Image (tube, rainbow, N blue to C red; front, side, top):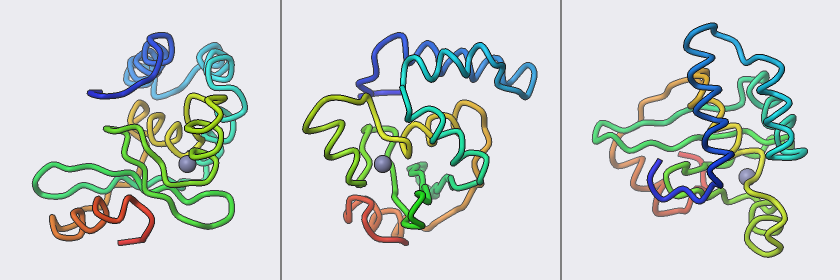
Length: 141
Ligand SMILES: [Zn+2]
């Protein structure tokens, strides 16, 4: 996870979820509780997104990856976990401006999907991926 600005505790927790999920295919309650300690209200909202299968992992032949997350309003946001960015208003407001939150529910949902291996996979062409990257994730592919 290069370039990610999550605190060590948060990263450790995601690793733990990944490991436990590989062994048991579940995320145990104690890790879910830890998740809401670290990420606050984002955590439960992100888990809801996961349950609604709102996260799709887009990958291109050259190995680029982006996550498309359908938010509560039905808008889709493309998150880049590699650079820890989401184009949604709450990321700009709570994360970038006020520094209140570590991340928004969309990025957390993408991280959790990565950790739990639960996202839908979709292959896109390199050209489409370039367009997504160039648009900063604000337009659907
Ligand atoms: Zn977001």
